[in-house]
Amino acid sequence: MKKKVVVALGHRALGNTLPEQKAAVKKAAASIAALVEAGYDVAITHSNAPQVGMIHTAMNEFGKSHEDFTPSPMSVCSAMSQGYIGYDLQNGIREEMMNRGIYRTVSTVLTQVIVDPYDEAFYTPTKVLGRIMDAEDAAIERKKGNYVVEVPGQGFRRVVASPNPVEVVEADAVNALLDAGQIVVAGGGGGIPVLKQGHHLKGASAVIEKDLTAGLLAEQIDADELIILTSVEKVCINRGTDKETELGVISLDDAKKYMDEGHFGVYNMLPKFQASVSFIEKREGRRAIITSMEALNDALKERTGTVIK
Image (cartoon, rainbow, N blue to C red):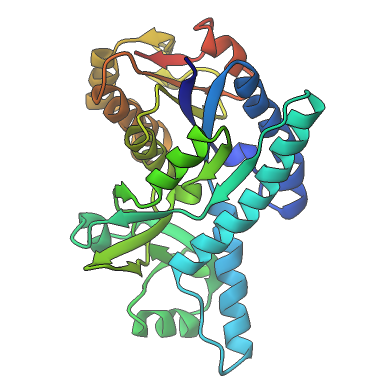
């Protein structure tokens, strides 16, 4: 029986610019194709930080030059980033698999993720994005109700909330495509953040942590494994000290202990461990792997990588 896996691609798997993304996707596609060859049903999530920032900046600059144009909200910018990143991933993975003699469809699902309107993150936005603004433009943003922070010596930038994901709206569609033998790209950039208002889903001014969405998607589709690909082969504790230690195969209890001890930092490894722990706790027999693309094959055999089980 095939195993179902959710793979979270980090920033390094996509690059910063359009040409960088094209080149980086080729490497990511090789890792995904290897999983398919190994018998996995694969759903893929991905980062979108540089991409959504570019889109947000471009759309708002366009709006400044065209009086009748309405600036695009964050939810729309997230949707745009999912589409064009998914386009590159679809083509890159399809080509890599066909080169290996594997004929499978790759589909991108524009994915909405419900967030709680009362999440504390909305009261203390932390995610910086978009262009550097002068004081006049920053004042305009504040009048719109947006949060702005000063960048010393440069100007001002917008900040948005990073609430926790509550529900992946299109999880059933992802499952149906996986059951049909397709490779699925979903939940890109943490998903399009939406607020549930009766039957209506309203876009939220937020950016969701993509690793948390990857873990939630894995839970909702009842995956067997969660793989988070990042820039390091193994996660370390006591980083930067003479007690620095690489983590190999560890238990769920060990993972919780290291989180409680504050080893991972809010914006670095902590969301990866939070997603892994939450996923593993929901069902017996699950496993989470945090490693680099280059080390993935050996990490699957538990020869390297940080493996939580």
